[in-house]
Length: 325
Ligand code: GFB
Image (cartoon, rainbow, N blue to C red; front, top):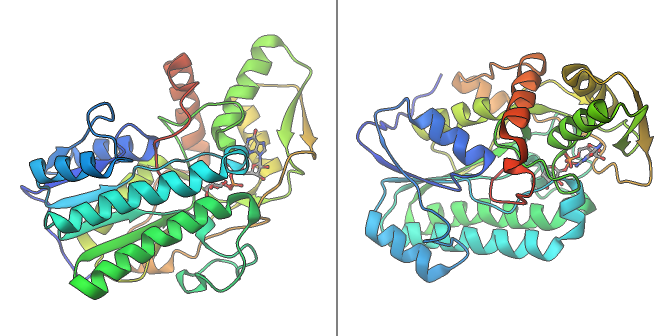
């Protein structure tokens, strides 16, 4: 159980990236706490702009910052846009973390990604395997930026005593996802593609890669719950993994999505597309030992994600970024 306790009561909590899948889930979750939630609209405050970020933080002076703003996307987007993934993420992190320190924010939660760990890390992946081997090439740009972000948190802790912490989520899915056909992550991509194939009565549908890679999927509202838990109970230099402990092959996952959608055609693996990392199951014993665990199984979460897709219609179809994961 956790000895550290941070009381959110009456605190001003800035959620950077509140329009993204993770940021919006964190706002939903924080709404159940007795705190004041602050958000900044991109049209007024662009977190890629240092001056605008600094001015916003000076004006609002939050007690706590959750950095959920990022350029995100699946394997296709990471491969196609390395400059965007590296530079935009580095810039957002620099602006938000530096300015938070400058205006006196003492507590900040940075959200990274399981792709920070080496491609062939020992499984399940422990936080200590950071920087112990080469990264997966399809997402090394994003991974390098996220590693820099968590290192910034550690550096501000070491040099200025700031209580800046980092959480590393596994692959996320759920309401507010990006349903872009090429740039999304696998859950949103397949929900959309299978739904469209069902409507078109298509005899078969493509699934990228060989179907053999293993992935762990966490429902985004569970991730948001973990973030609030960590804000309240975690105050260490080391990053902390957030996952479910369960993994499925992409082939099994595709079959589950097809079932949730009600698509009865054939799944065809397109091996001209990349598989990415073969396996990345997180070791979440550090988080479990503090007393947190996920609630939503894939069987429960996938229908909710499908509902969001059907409900949102075209709302998300052309969004390419702004959530962290
Ligand atoms: O979700 P995804 O892009 O993330 O792909 P990664 C996961 C697996 O699903 C890969 C396969 O093996 C893909 O080849 N897949 C099958 C598909 N069909 C599709 C499809 O239609 N779209 C997509 N996107 N994948 C990401 C990183 O890697 O993980 C990010 O690129 C981030 O930077 C995220 O770290 C958590 O797990 O491969």
